[in-house]
Picture 1: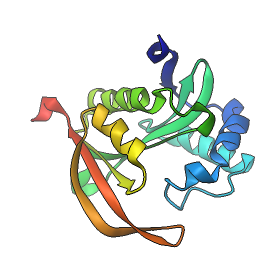
Picture 2 (picture 1 turned 30 degrees about the vertical axis):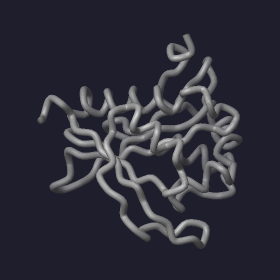
Picture 3 (picture 1 turned 60 degrees about the vertical axis):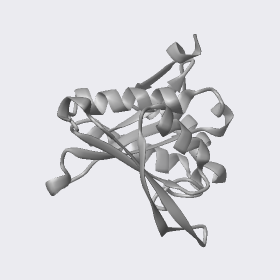
Length: 172
């Protein structure tokens, strides 16, 4: 079953070529925050992988499909009074789109966040045009919290941001 061929794992330096190849894609970057470089080079991939090695607890993972790195998924743990919340972010390389990979990866990291990191809340902000990502979150039980109107500037355009969240049922 395709679902069983999808997993999340720690990134390794040996992933840097594949990571750079997949991330160096404008179609991916159009849905990411601007702090992600574009174009995306091998040295960017190496820096990111080294950064993930310093995370304690681990928050960023490679997404694997059929034993190939195909994307990245992260939980960004918030600080101060928000310390039991995390923002989820993810992307799948374009050659792997349409395989249900993001849906399974979101399920895996949500479980990790609730069970291993003891998070209470996970949330995400999705650009208005990224309907596929909205569906991915909805399939995993995330609810739309609201629409932040004209909240994002990306590629010179002012966009709405759709906010999604899920609550750890052990904390309800």
